[in-house]
Image (cartoon, rainbow, N blue to C red):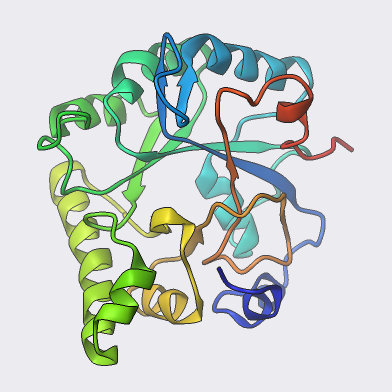
Length: 252
């Protein structure tokens, strides 16, 4: 992970954009859903319903992730105090079978980060047809999680520097091309696989015109963040009661 010093010097550092210093937003990241807890990354559908009801009852507005990015870049109005953005990584089929009905009920925006190599190929993954249906609801934005979810630390040790840089660019651009060709765009947000990021990865992403990147660093997003290393809270089924409340920004 990048250090706090690296974050402050990284591309797209928030203080370089000259926007309000009052931003305080939580970005939540889910992976899969189901009627029961099948593994550590499964959130029960009933738990998801409870979490969304808690947000509503306690005055936390669910906003599009792009609205948060726009404010950070000085290109959009402030989101409401105490806002939350919802993301889902990997493209698991339970997004369609379990999450979609809940999202439709509440009309909330969701950003999906997927790696196209799995789509319509892996048994656990969504199909392109299902993703197109999700996009038609106008509630789901589909963005990049690289092309096949590599561990960039492993690849950096394995490859020579120039080959590694080419590998990273291919992972970013091939993912973007696949999603835009199948679903339309723009695809300019990247969720770093395994939450791995550093200054080199952020520089490459910036050169490839990605405007924001997302980690799994557990903290509130403030106006001082580097937009290519925005923190998110990993949500599991244990995120209930005080554990869930601790992930949320304070309301003013």
